Image (tube, rainbow, N blue to C red; front, side, top):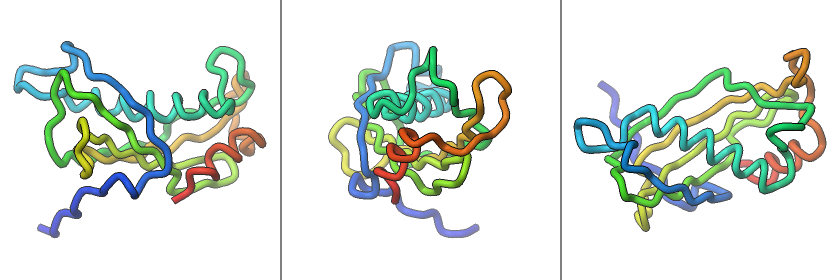
Length: 145
């Protein structure tokens, strides 16, 4: 087996969103179920884009479709923890963006979980890839790693 990479610290991320856990997020093992991590990743990225004016969920002509995800779990998160999601862009292409996200539990400095989401940006109607529009490109380049 290869040696596991140590968790990133907060300074590895460029923007942060604060997210709350819910009672229903815990599973029978007493910690947040793994699928919830992906929901938090998605909420963090889309919340950032909305706050930057780069995405209007109901009306934007261009939307991001997730084409690849991954997550590395370092330590447990449980309700009622507050999660600080660090966000950065690891790769900005012509029509795609790979986001790096770190989930930090409460005031901890090392990530409890880290992942990546790759979005391909498409026309809302045709679902065909298209180059990032100016507002989106500006928002994602502002948090480039």
